[in-house]
Length: 224
Length: 224
Image (cartoon, rainbow over all chains, first blue to last red; front, side, top):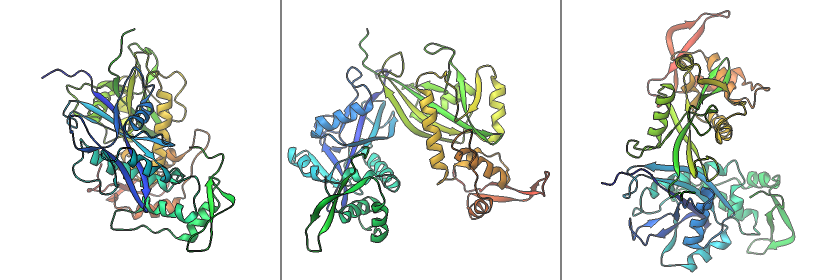
């Protein structure tokens, strides 16, 4: 056996979206060994010559694998050890990214045979490496963070109603496929009515079965 | 310049303790280049041949540098990039560890000339690499976690009073050296009286200037 002096370093990305009120995570089919044919999180091997830091590596993974640029990307945790990859000692820095709803379909259309959105609570059993564990970890971290931060705004299209925003928050907070988390509508609206992160789009409404609903957008000063 | 194919991987540890009601972090003086003579977090270079994972590397760092075994160690965040270490592309996986109060003095006595406990909010300016940034990050994460978890118990000696426990929580929650965070004594006692994590030591009291104070210890089933 070859004496291994350096670990393999990669950045992997759990890319989340909300479709049909369900939190979903993106998987790509691996084309090369190891784990060829299995589904995995999009990732890339660190290139010390070209990547200034690991966020650059993570964004490169999304560009190369699914041609996407995301507004929100954050490092979550590093998974490392001698046993997680058959190539040897490896280190995967897991990132979390959020994709606005109006870009979800475009990702699938671009490469439908090797990309799938799947339920974030049930990503399947045939995943490469420790990616099932990574998805569980990312799912839990996302649920914890959503309560404190303006994170859900990163999942919204450019214009949205408060009901749509509430549905996205509920999808993230739901503990699993079987149970649906319900937020109190009045309390939710009071919270976001006070929020400096979103503003009404003057005179813009969505017209559906109900009475017209005010459309909102992210406030100009909102920091992504 | 040598073409760098692999990053340098290390595990660094922010080891916290509470002394005199102040949250402190341990620094060691670097003996070798780069940054020889500067203060730094204790850390170790990953050894793929011997370390099963990064927690092993982090615990090895504490053993080698300050001869300590800690009950609580958790990964916080990975700092990485081409610019943070003069040796080239490097990656430091920051861990947080907590040292019980009765072991603090032993650490300093063992190697007083190259080890110091310093104020976690003011670790000084002459720190190696990005370690000042790492300490700030660890300090913030610790403050956030203390509110939800049983973390402060890891900082207590084997037996302690509720007043001592409250002082430790206040030290962690304090936003900086100038401001002292105060917890409501009644609410604090009600919260921990209901906690399954600590139990009274039957018939054991601390005798001081005030009336005798009941001593507590961590409950037998408490998971470190």
